[in-house]
Image: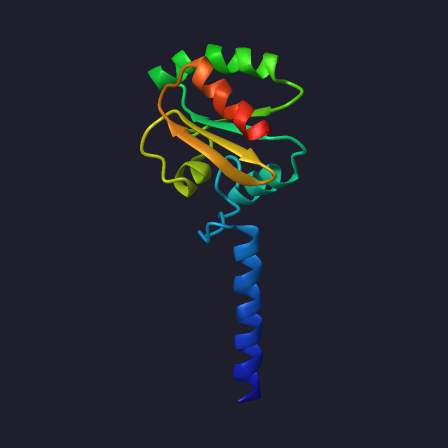
Length: 137
């Protein structure tokens, strides 16, 4: 009986620890998979001192190619206020699976580790800047 309680207690601690490290509660990455791990992603999002605009994209994506010049301009204009993180979903299949990507590009805006905005598809520079500026307030 004591062993069962101990194992249950250890399992509960393990599950709670993993959930806190992986807030969506999805399975952790296998170490032999290529690309950025989900743990690396959540750690990066959590430790950044400024808001982060994450862009999930792919080289083959026509809309991603159209969005890139706008994102480059925003990265220059807001470099002191927002960090831009491009993630190629082909090179980072774990991130692709984690977000269950079904269309690109996807923009995710994080502030203090919490997602405050998400958008799939194209968006004008004006609209995107308005969303970023609203997050900065």
